[in-house]
Length: 338
Image (cartoon, rainbow, N blue to C red; front, side, top):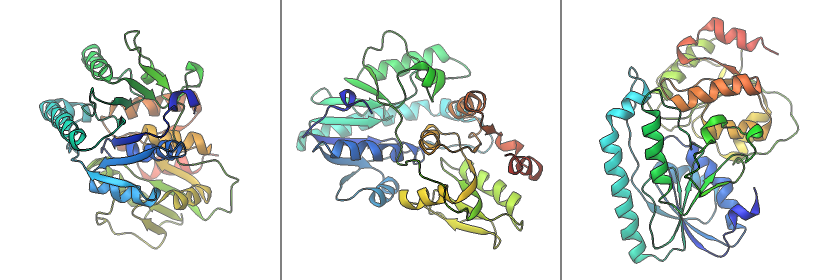
């Protein structure tokens, strides 16, 4: 990371990551560790699930409870339609979190506020920093309007940190991180990942399935992949990304882990021959750091993930399948790839 973009020293920082899945929370971990090394003190505002994850990753942290966005997804409607329907709710949550922050700052002195994709988490009394790679949202309809709204929120912050390379030819997020000239507060801080590339060790599993993201699509993908691999000769390790009970019967060729901490996940990456995962940007930054190939399955209707899966397939030679394309035959074809 360029030090110039992270020039915070001996500050008291309030950080709040978005709660749509754990990707935003996970990518904050290396950022927090970097800034902790510069003698900054953190308070993390988050949901109980985010806190449970972060307590596995970070020591001696101070937490404060913050409500989530609680956006519901559908097993039928495309995600962009579902979000469009819930826009009034999103606007209310944004205003609510802005008021929450103002109230919190009245009783707690902070030097800096960092928001990972929480649009209302800014205040004029402190330096406010927004983290996003989505500076040019790829929407199916109303793209111009959506990006004007997106830019209007980003402008409310003093700085926007984009977790990608400044050089366009190296970009992991493709056109998502292109931005209009009106946004003068953008700083590229390079990709964020908890992981580092290590020498391969002996392979213990044929496939690591790494699940994440919102319901019900997480469970739907989990069910499809269990059906494909159950009672086969493949040794599977399934990292579910949730503590909710599993709904499918599994066979002895499965090892199941609900939530994996960084050290455990690093070992699983190194000891697995193949990887199947979503094409969320935080996961892709991890794949880039580890130098791993994977089968990418975008969340249905989530235009960002669909774009990234297509972009990485074309630009970085990854394999991609739509969720509806998952069958024993399509997965077997992936397993035979070299």
